Length: 108
Image (cartoon, rainbow, N blue to C red; front, side, top):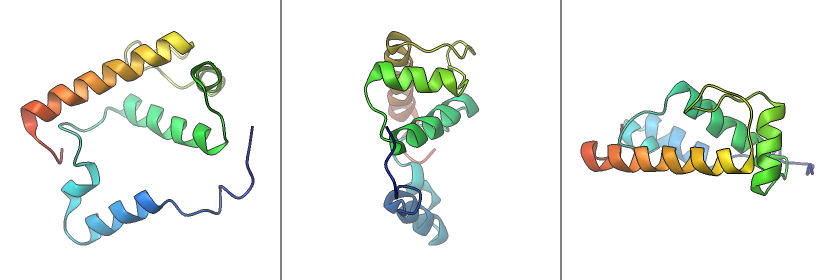
């Protein structure tokens, strides 16, 4: 499902983070992370944002859209997604980011 007008709508969060970087506070852009995202994690995040922007929701539909876009799973390097692999991937990334945050603090 796609909604019209999403392409023109500004992303308030991205604008706020760009302003933080421009003001000399780059750590605020990623304050909840204890480490940088890998390229595969960043690609997944970007793909999910684009898919959500199209109005697609639900794990099965998200997984289908990720597979159609050949987005690589960070844990395996494969591009075949199911609702179960999506849930497992997101849980693993979240757990790893939580552990990195505990170890390194914010702003990575």
